[in-house]
Amino acid sequence: YTPEQAAPFRAFEWRKLMHADDQASFPEYKRRLHQLSPGEVATFEYRMRHANGSWRWIQSQGRIIRDPQGSDTPVGMVGCHLDVTELVNTRLALRESENRQRDILDNAPLAIYIKNRAGQFLYTNPFSAQALGLTSEQLLGKTPEEFFDADAAAIFRKQDEIVWSQNQPHTIREILPEIGGKRVFLTEKFLLRDHAGQPTSLCGISLDVTAL
Image (cartoon, rainbow, N blue to C red; front, side):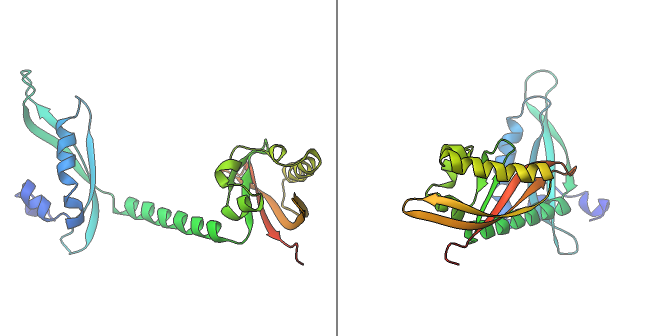
């Protein structure tokens, strides 16, 4: 809309341009506005109909102006509207990507886990936890020494240290002791890195090859 087209808009006209699914949240935004402490700003994100018929994501930021004579009576409002469509679309795409990744990890017939430098589990997918007869929650923060015998834990620790020290992927066969026998896994271990390329954790992906 041009400034001339938008100039006559009042709250009622503005709300008519708001997406129906977002209008239910508007009263809560107004309530927060009136409860703000001096200097605080309330924000509200919603979809608004563009003049060309498309929907744009708008972030409104506002605060109430109160009577300077000290009566605390609202006498006006000041605020701004920002077009955050690209930001919201990026946020939604990221959320979709994270959900897709979570679905893959949760359903993969592979043991997938992440450990920190101390060997503590930061993440285990359901298949990985089930291989140990535990839940992912029970594994978080634990080290192999807490649920394997000393000899097995020492082997896992040594294999992890090879990856950390050589700073490159390592493929090995791992034997997981269990009641009544053992399970054999073909495991690829590699380091995960931060934005600067520095290693932060170790990831392992294991395929059960016991039957092969």
